[in-house]
Image (cartoon, rainbow, N blue to C red; front, side, top):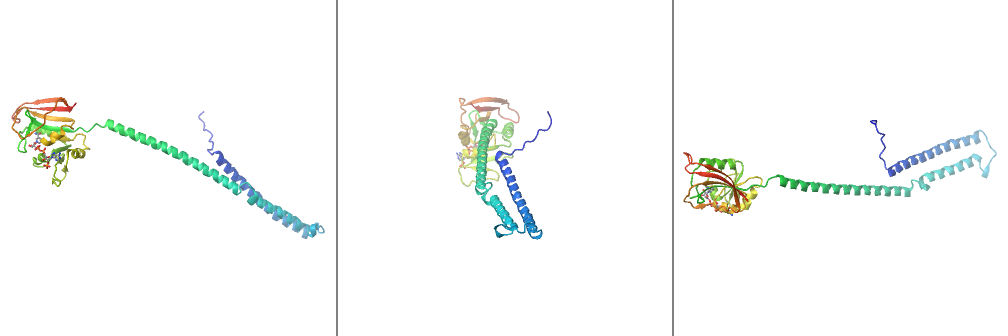
Length: 305
Ligand SMILES: NC(=O)c1ccc[n+]([C@@H]2O[C@H](COP(=O)([O-])OP(=O)(O)OC[C@H]3O[C@@H](n4cnc5c(N)ncnc54)[C@H](OP(=O)(O)O)[C@@H]3O)[C@@H](O)[C@H]2O)c1
């Protein structure tokens, strides 16, 4: 039961026929060679028999010594044998060679056809699996979450004279924590309100100016769309202001991280009204006044419905 199986050679019928024919051909030539050698020995023997041993000295058919006639007849038979092997013989002659060649060509063509069809099948499978993997990737990788981060007063004030209106230490920390290592998208004016670029974040500045100069590493674009494209590798790029950019981004953002400062302020820049038909509040944390925080505020998260 567990003994070795007899190995059956995997040679097809045509190949077997070719091998058998080659063997036959070798035998055929061998026989001709033996015939030739026997002819030489035989002829020598006949010459010796007639001339030296005087056998049948007086027997002269066709007025020739009998051994000459015998050798000539034998020679004729040998020539016929040679002709038969190399010229007259149908087996392995020109037509036979052509037939074999045609057979081989047909065989190779069949193999190529088979390989081609296997290749096409494999290609199709590969393409299918690529599509499947793409779909899987699309399903498994979460969509990029474009997030607006803003601090706005009860009256939606966000800035005055290109500056923030308040200083709330925990709000700055909150901003820092959320945006750390992310792309931050901003209008040119907001960018210019910073003393220098913020560490650990990739800045993308939107301007209509063509030759706007910014420090190395800051990405300059001419539209909000280009800014979002430039942040494509980020799963959560942040829109950080100011008023003009918030207005444009509110329609396309997925999330808002709002710090609502619970007072009204005089300002020249405002955050647009949040339409509660489109947004739902998903979390809220209240922060009281203290020595570091002159105003009460709440961290509120909104997500698009
Ligand atoms: N409270 C907060 O959370 C907060 C956050 C950020 C900012 N802010 C405040 O907001 C104020 C700044 O806001 P802002 O509205 O005046 O300015 P901004 O939105 O920061 O920048 C406006 C500039 O962005 C460029 N821009 C806007 N839309 C564009 C578009 N579609 N295509 C190309 N470029 C475009 C233009 O730059 P060019 O003129 O160069 O073409 C435009 O002048 C400041 O007071 C700042 O302190 C507050």
